[in-house]
Image 1 (spheres, rainbow, N blue to C red):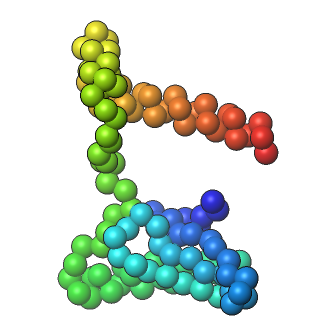
Image 2: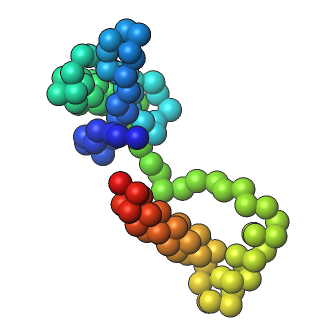
Length: 119
């Protein structure tokens, strides 16, 4: 998936062949903020305007805008994997959180190498 990035927010890039338009939404927030137009250049501009408008509207309403990512998420891994990871963290004298972060980093680096080879 291709995305735009602006002021810490990411936006999707999607097509509607039926309507002959490009459209998207601000990703990773609970609020629904969308934009659309007919060219990629204009879609990027509409995305940036949507982010600016979203932040302005939140400020006017005196509410905190959703942050795209908090750095926290819940993962359900099953009892056995949970136990194995906890034992590993104890044996490695590190936290369970660090084990998960290291595992994600290793997976994503491997995944990026694999996707580069297939491009």
